[in-house]
Length: 266
Image 1 (cartoon, one colour):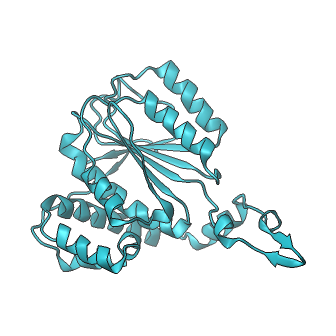
Image 2 (cartoon, rainbow, N blue to C red):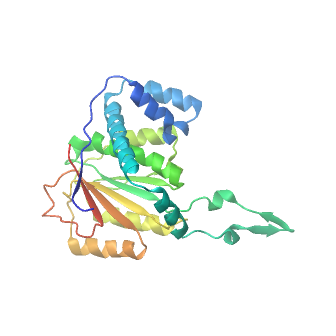
Image 3 (cartoon, rainbow, N blue to C red):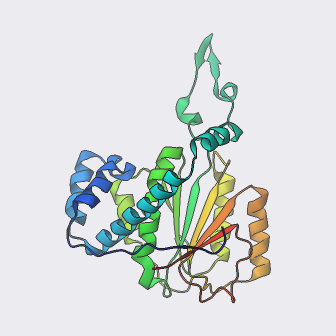
């Protein structure tokens, strides 16, 4: 739905509230930590005001998602979509050795391609950095439920990649996500090339999705070059959605190639 607006106001906190702890304890990311990592996590972030702001945005977004799910009769649709999804045949995974049938569940468990989040950072995104990370937080749980990898790519002048298999993580990788803070002017061409590489190298490619979080102020934006790269992604059936944190540069960089654009209203 092009032009849709999301409002997710956050409130800074100086310690974990019961609501925050409830959200954390239920999250796949916290449950994937070892016991020692859980203790270290709570000690590290209990008075981290920046993380509390990230967490509050995530909680507010979860409430929006829950409200949408309550108002949409989705059970029948989900069942229908389940059987429409392309799936790997059991026979392709089955191995026979000396009349013994081996089924490698670990190799066949992924049924969807990765969910790739491209987060613009740098000089023009500093004011919304925590807010954007808060929007990403619920995606860990979504990828865990959907049994797919979450790949977060912060980008500015260069491109980095954080991979969370099935939305799970070790504490040091999660720390990298919370602490990522790139400088400089953001460029879109390298990020699109990186996405193509990720898709081509993925063991499962079906239903790969890309979310671009941006303010549309991109140093190297060239519509012809962008469209050529996007066409390559469309040939691979990759869905691209954008969350725009500003409408200021929409006319300069209209991004007509996007399937959906959501505008964030703070």
